[in-house]
Image (cartoon, rainbow, N blue to C red; front, side, top):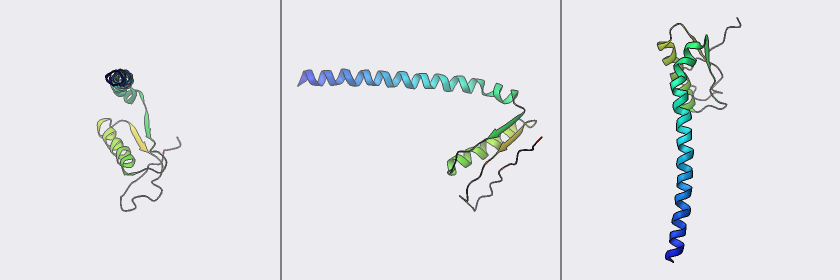
Amino acid sequence: MAAISSLMGKILNKKQVAEDKFISEKAKKRDSFLKQFPHYINSALQIVIFPHVNPDGDCLGGAFGLRETLRAQFKEKNVYVVGTSQGMFPWLEMDFDDIPLD
């Protein structure tokens, strides 16, 4: 029984090490993106935020919150949220933007 327990411990440890490595790689990619984020914003003339299809409250709140934050921090940028809430949350005033054709 001790041998089986020891073997299971080794298997679980290898699995944990693999998961930790995966998470570490994802964290490195995220950190790299976040460090470059101001560069992406500064190099853009316009910023368009696309919520996903059938957006829930978190999606819509995040999209509109990001729009307002970017507008406040980068006053010279045109920042838009496009799409539709598809009738969800009719009591909220969510003003989706129209992108100028020019």
